[in-house]
Length: 290
Length: 270
Image (tube, rainbow over all chains, first blue to last red; front, side, top):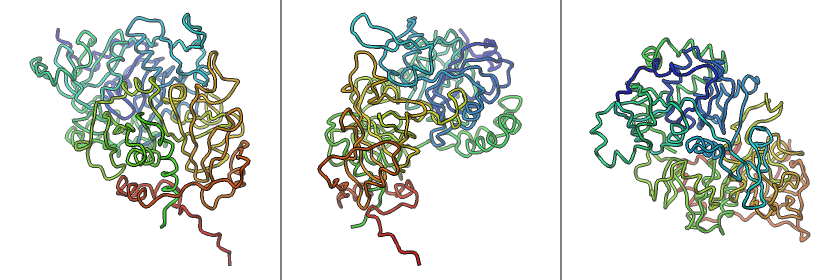
């Protein structure tokens, strides 16, 4: 089955009010091209689930988001994400704030068709106080409290992979695939953005096949967007763009979403990449060292 | 021998890992990471540590001057999903820097002031604090000891469980919660007072107990056997290893003004 399509066509499945999960972690390997296409669309009232960075910040700032399910929103080297911070301090988004591990459990519950997974995480903290939708339950096996972390069922998952073939076999060549496997398994419909497209024979190398973290039937659309993770990293191809993130923070702090969108969003990804110096400049971004 | 306050704090903080055995040591932030790396390089070589990216190391990476991850002493893949397998097993000790800490040892990195729906200042979010606090040992690192950090009431957003009887879950006792030490720029504290109340363990050279009390929003206990011990000073060997772990001396940029570890006498104004 050929799943290669355009970002616009792939994202047309997203309806108002849907729950959208976004893979990656903070400033690392985010499907930013898909996020920008979503920003250019009419979709609204979305619930976003993510280990958040500028993806969550921009979507909140654009007014498309009703609720964010998050453990953090951060650019790592810049601890506080400016657009998310603005949205929170204005009270313009609802939130379900959970622990990083609870998010993993919620995605697994969704993937496995369980209504919840019991965990001790969250006990004694404001996580369970501020999220009344998360219940504390009795166990049939001991006399202790347990948090029933509910399934985070996703309508759509957006992830960024290094390479894929047309059928949706995806390689993540980066050091970490984060929780991307659980995002696509938790979703009804998953869209992968890739830097490079390959023939299926590419995966006959067992070292490459080891870097495939889910099966092709988890993926419904494959979007080829070289440089599509910018300004986040797509290790080993390119790092995240620190100067761009600094400019992004200035624009958001000075003039909010409109200032950033006027400077960078453009009408499509060709325009976007021109505004940030072109694909060659993206590919030359150094890999981060921790 | 001269040393900076940052180096004194690194050495004091490294001691929290001495008796840990074979657990994952996670220091978040440059000085906590140096503290964990120093412990692994000296007093507890059994410690486990990651490269802060996706691999476990048999030898800590330097915190500055590293140009790539290719030549590091990797042991095994340790991506973020696998970190949680470790966290939930309990075999971890995290050294982290909360924005607020209260008398129960509860902490906050989520948001400050305002309402929960619209906080005055949005910080990071709870991150992994709830899970860390109920699963494994935690110590805290506070670069500037003040009443803004050590708050009078409860934290604005309680991100980690502490020794608060009102929040103790059914079936749990305080023995299930493992808060080790708090290292600040003034002193070392723990929660080993009666009913797990906060206690001063040692004062840094030249610091008076009153200064700690003036800058803490809650009561801190001291053992009856006065005077309080002085925080142990770095050895020449420790300082040499710290220099190797931080060749670019980024540690000198972490505390405002990079104060010396031995306080200079107050100068008379003329």
